[in-house]
Amino acid sequence: MTETLGFCQEMRPESCGFILFGATGDLAARKIIPALFGLCEKKLTPRNFYAVLVSRTPLDRGALESRLWDTVLKAGFTPAPEVFSSFLERLEYIQADYESDAFYRRLADRLTALDAKSGVKKKRLFYLATPPAAFEPITSKLKTSGLLSDPTDCTCWSRVIIEKPYGSSLESAASLDAGLKLAAPEAQVYRIDHFTGKETVQNVMALRSANAVFDGTWNNRFVDHVQITVFEELGLEGRAAFFERMGLARDMMSHILQLAAITAMDLPSTFRDTDFKTEKRRFFESIRPLTREEVRRQTVRGQYAGYRSEPGVAPGSAEETFLAFKFLVDNDRWRGVPFYVRAGKKTGSKKTRIDVVYKKPDHGIFTHIDIGYPNVFSFGIQPEERVSFSLISKHPGPKLCFTPRSMGLDYRPEGHEAAGYPTDYERLLIEAMSGDQTLFLSSYEIGFMWQFLAPLLEAWSAAPATEPLHAYADGTPGPAAADELIKKDGRSWIQL
Ligand code: BG6
Image (tube, rainbow, N blue to C red):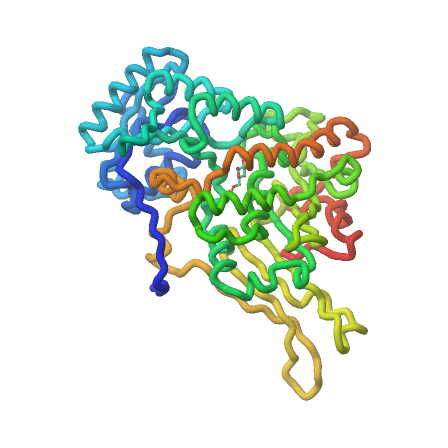
């Protein structure tokens, strides 16, 4: 087992009830129910805990249980019968009519009864896995029925988890946020971006804060540029209706910005959520927005060749499935260091990584020969969970020759220890049950993302002729124009 040093901060989820709206939907099946089951299987749920699944679909107990069984199998679990039974014992299902006051009264009564039965002291975590249009109506009904109270004079609490898409434009996101704020203040709202829950994403911050080598060189004196890659092997996976409205930029920008922030924000003085969010905000405030002209020069949209033949996709669809862009950060640490991003579906094998590329040497013999970029810090986020550092050393032998080498650290230990780690969604549920908002997005961050996206979306829709959609073959790393984007700055994408 890997040893830890003295400092171990542990999240302690509080005993609570978990209420999942939209329980028969796609998000619940793919992510939330598997995460709930995973927490039970790993014995990470709080001591006193129950879950209420809520949706409009009529389901009797038998249908619910077989549906849950299929869901956890599909998510890759092979549940031991006793673990699955104890999972079921903590669950119940209520058919909902989200518009009816009577439903919320029934829910309130049921939660009171379950609190008493399970020894939970009016602590409730509501997860709205519904379309965003339902966030405001549901939270407002929860509030008027007294289910969203969060008094300061009692240990009870109510929290609401919501999940992207947070609107589809700057305006729709602002109105969604305003509606939500009427029912629940910021301290009660937990906005998920599941990338922040990934082990390896958190490891970037851990490495940066514990190892002075990072902070000392993590700036424009040493770093030439940064690359962020979010490639997926899969295409639409039956999500044409969603993707045809959103496209890749809207779908993935939050994840991209979160990766950029943990890589480049100044380190907070503590890991308390308020300090963390303050520094993250300062970083976002320093990102220079793209002008219309920069959108033309610094962004590339692509679409994989088979996209228009996917079921549910319009024959002439202009939605992008690939995006590459460059942005700059106007602060003392990063001024002049370009950040290059590429993200896409059907771009070969799955690869999420961050590469911090150090400057070339500019002294001695290296003023006359170009040895490329000798030093790159690479953070493999998924599926390889690896940190590596490339450098150039002397090639063994009688001559003075140079040879590229790489040092690597596999992040996850093998064997049973790794099996007990929470996944991204499991971790985020634990954090929300513990009342820690560090890994969740603030209202400001959502607003920032849409502000950043707005000129891109405007330029693409206003002038499709000057903002072409480049085709790329399925399974390749995007269109040639993405290579040109970085090449014209005299650089190239890191080979994956
Ligand atoms: C989701 C996007 O937020 O993230 C999906 O909606 C994408 O389109 C997914 O596939 C990627 O997440 P992960 O954890 O599989 O890399």
